[in-house]
Amino acid sequence: MAVAAAASKADGQLDRRALGRALSRIANTSVEEALDGMRETAGGASRIGITGPPGAGKSTLIGRLARQRLDSGAAVAVVAIDPTSPHTHGAILGDRIRMDGVADDPRLFIRSLASRGANDGLADNIADVLATLDGYPFDEVILETVGVGQAEYAVRALVDTLVLVLIPESGDQVQAMKAGTLEMADIYVVNKADLPGAERIASEIRAVARLRRRLTSDWEPPVIMTAADRPDDIAALHDAISRHLAFARASRNIDEVRRLRREYHVKSLLMRTVTDILAENPRAVDCSPREAFELVVARLRERRR
Ligand SMILES: Nc1nc2c(ncn2[C@@H]2O[C@H](COP(=O)(O)OP(=O)(O)OP(=O)(O)O)[C@@H](O)[C@H]2O)c(=O)[nH]1
Ligand SMILES: [Mg+2]
Image 1 (tube, protein in one colour):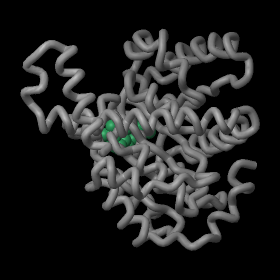
Image 2: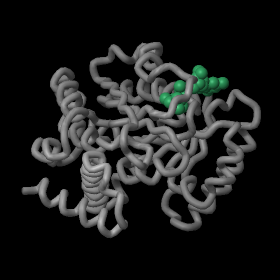
Image 3: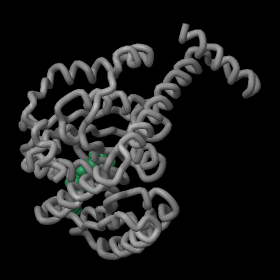
Image 4: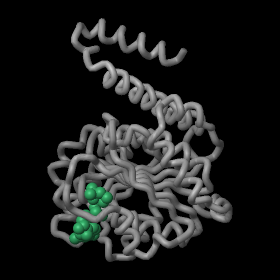
């Protein structure tokens, strides 16, 4: 089983203060410093992405899920990317999880990141953060991201199992998403299933899931209806995640996975650098795109000397 196989990691002592310091350093570091401090580690935790529209109940679900995964023996890190665009509902993740009484568990680590800079809805240093976590004895990293659209493409490359959380009001979104993002998820959740309309949206998603099965014929993404206060629902999601992690571990090409993650990492480091260069040279774009491009490339070269 996914969790049992990795359970030995939970025995390793988690140096929370060292990890906290390392993550704070990353938040304030330049790309050059990030590169200098980077070590590639073998292994690394299983990564579970939980994504969906604002206010879908992702944090609440993660709080419940974390409890189950800790109980099954895993040491768990939760990273939540808070969108900078303001929306008012919901407490911050830490508070929500604390309410569930899991935050005191020594095998749980929680960190929120501002979704600064990145053009894909994630945080521009998320790859650095995940690489840092790989150096600590976690069995699993749960990544919460907001969004329906751009963010899913990015997060897909970074996680082993992608859970898409929708709610009964997401009907129009399901229609709009059919072409792309919806097909990327490994597990669908219709959350707030205590509200009316949950069954209708679940059957719409099932139709998409069946289509995907016809295309790939390996994993049939389950559609799970959940309500935060129904423990059986959370258990069903927990089991589906464990099954998918085991499936992914058995079927994926680990070298290819690493290559894709490295590609994402390099691209995000480059994007940060180019963004810095443009910020330092605001007049750089007062010319043709070609001239602006040449200027940025020249500045990039200077930085590497
Ligand atoms: N009816 C109902 N409400 C829920 C359920 N789960 C969460 N909520 C409520 O939905 C609101 C948003 O919950 P969050 O867990 O903060 O949602 P989120 O998706 O993490 O929100 P953002 O991170 O802000 O995008 C809160 O008021 C929750 O109490 C549920 O199963 N049923
Ligand atoms: Mg949240």
